[in-house]
Amino acid sequence: MEEKVFINDFINFGMHEFFYGDGVFSFEKHIIECLVHIYGKKTLKAIYDSKDENAFAETMAKYGIKHSVYDNFLRDTTKYWKFKSEKEQNPALKTDVTSAIEIELVTLYIQRCLSYTPTSEDLQGFESELLNDFEAIKFHFNTSIEPNKTREFWEKKKKILSDDIELVEIKPEYLDEFTYSRFGVKLEDVKKMDYRMVDELNKYIKEKIKADENDNKKTRKESPNKDTIITSGNGFVDALLIVSIIATEISIGLIYYFLNV
Image (cartoon, rainbow, N blue to C red; front, side):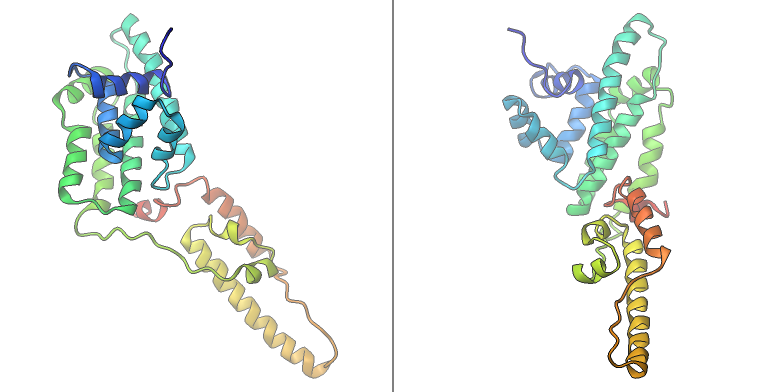
């Protein structure tokens, strides 16, 4: 009986080559080597041996990576597998999907670093595995449209991981759920926002509440028996909510690290 493909052909082949192969270079094996650096050899080997696809997906998401990044990784590895067959027919053929896959690895690695600040040895080790293997360099010059694209991307991003920069995820202070609900906002939606959006929304709500309280005091003096209901009555909150929907399409864990790069 034919053995079931684990995840997809690319990952299945790369896992087998990395854990049980004869040491011959392949791009698939190269990518798995980098994944092993991020998630651990023992963990990935156990997942591959058990062919547990759910565990693989959960492991890839364990540091808070967005599901869309995982989906893109699967999409691009599948694209490469198709390209590989096409290149056998046309050796001069080149692609940009190789760099796309490696850049996704950088995103996965940086997301892990939000949970565990890397040592200089870990940083250098990942860089070496990703960029400095001679066979991988030769492969890119023969296969990739832009052979140095991953290296250029990494050089731009790795400064946020240097020992001189403290990797601290910025966590905004949230108002209570009831306060948000008074303004037609759900706390769960607020938590999807970038921290600066949360700050602006909180500032607006606090100012609005203060203004309404002043109005209520004035109203009670003028008409003691009249009740007043607090409401936003302003499109600013709705605008922020629209922006928050857009923000959910961006990696929340990375957005504030890349803004000034």
